[in-house]
Length: 85
Image (cartoon, rainbow, N blue to C red):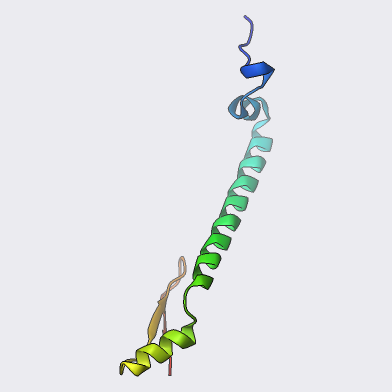
């Protein structure tokens, strides 16, 4: 039986991955996941840098008579409460 080939003789990514040994597929998938995570972290940092600085927010809150408090959470760790002076 003849194998069906995609447009202009190209092989799909899924077909290419299926043809690889299992260990190599796992390595590629792990590297891909690491790259996606890195991109997501950079996107988050980029968005975070657009926000006002902590010192600016603290001054604005203090001008209204309040105290700025931040709650920081990390995976598998207890939350950390940050209070500015």
